[in-house]
Length: 113
Image (cartoon, rainbow, N blue to C red; front, side, top):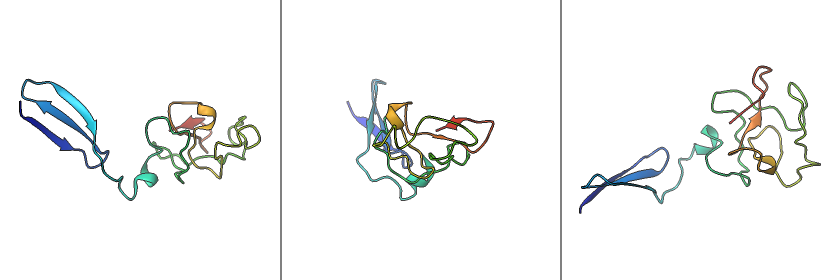
């Protein structure tokens, strides 16, 4: 059977569709776009994410990890020394969540991806 496929230029994945209608999903072997870190905390388990993204997917500014306002929390560098809790960057401290996230500076939204 002949297969067709196409890479998604934004996310780097493609679907391999066989003539019989079977679909297989793969990941393209390519470099992320230069501005990837500025757009997304990312997907998958990101306990080792150390990028500088400080805005959530919904556009909210991240709260600094060393701040307890507007949201108090227990994610501190003392309790999570290896989690990279620097500034207000998206992180996944203690694997608490599905992927990197942050508390927000919006009093109405505690946290977001």
